[in-house]
Length: 457
View 1 (cartoon, rainbow, N blue to C red):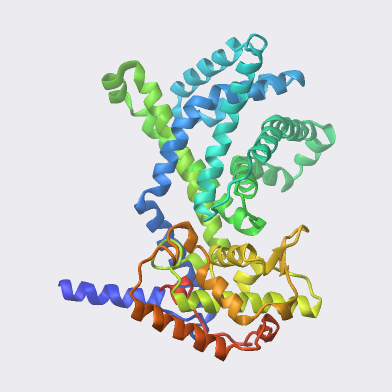
View 2 (view 1 turned 180 degrees about the horizontal axis):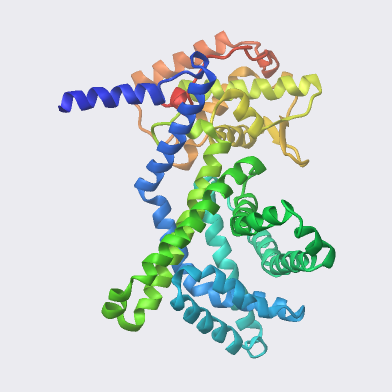
């Protein structure tokens, strides 16, 4: 039995992970890609990173929900629509049933008791920091999902987040107010009396909660990560996340309605337990939708092993030389510079791998990044002045000073002599070659690959 199961698993792995798309029909390609997406999402959930970050966001939410709502409450109060905060909070906590109403009333009471005028400058700064910290934690979680190492600067964070926290509620309630105003117009009411317009409006009203959540999730997926997220993948993640969130609300409402035993065990803490469970489920669904958006935009990460591909030494050299040749060729042609995303797509290599090597070339002074949007890469020096050997040495030595340098490593003399002979042979073989000689075109039909497995060491 074990042998048979092992054979079936091997056959399944070969079908899903070993398939070359060039040899499959369009229908089978769709099925294989869908299966890969389902499997990598299940793998990410089972590894626990999403659940761990959802737990962290629950803790941050408990600390920052009152300052966050107080900040929005203050802005909305200036526009006379502060009374809309409570209905929105009730809608979010609707799955908790009567306990959601009690939690909402307590939060609103905390907000009303908070007097910003007596906080002082230090207290106001702490209030703003607490509100911003939640969005910062969300960004860190999204950056992890999107394999982004660099976070936004402190100044950009505050300006970007505060503008969202201050302007976002105004735009939200303005849109809701305009919708309500249009629906209350006599002309619109008369139109809705005719079929099938009335039926379509009724069905649209049922779908409105889904559309609202999907739109909110899509906006978050585009706005929060410190990388460029296309609308299509963000919408795909928003649809999955929005449907899951609305459906989870119904299931959780049934769970909360039958949770009398929790009240008997935890007494007055039962409300807090249910509130934390709903927050955890909400954050987990939001992060899961972000994972869907990531894998839709970056199908090269739908591989059997998680994490970034581990480049071998020769693959690192080959990829860096290829990147430099493509950048140089585009520069000589006078075309628009390559962006990191375009290079990754053309070479079928994960974006983070390409960005790592581009950073090494940039640190070595052979490429520079443009200031225009989208940011591209151009040669930083005359192509004829950078020898191929210099470029190769730059790629080989990139990053070694961070942990261990050649000078600090005790090496026996026979090995030193062998390495010197290799260097002399390389110098002789590459004599007279410059970066300008690397500017050949890519093959029209590159070998079919299934993703980062092709570059794993």
